[in-house]
Length: 90
Image (cartoon, rainbow, N blue to C red):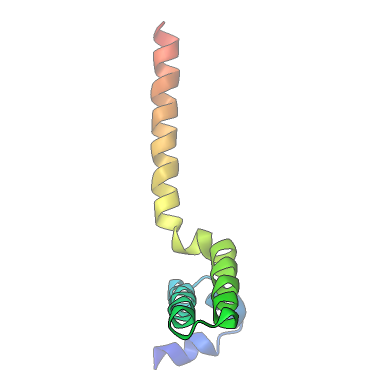
């Protein structure tokens, strides 16, 4: 019942917005709404999918892709250092 403590935490909203599980579920809902809109041919479902996907993209990018962004930044720093070292040698 550890999740109960997580739900009842003092900063519930902040913890939930930093949770990969929450944003993964949001992405799953967006994809489900998109697929349902294709099956039902309902524009309201497509609009809902677009809204959920857009909100998830803008708010959850740093949470879902934190590891990827960190690796990319380290790689960029390494390349920048190599470039600077090469310029100093010349």
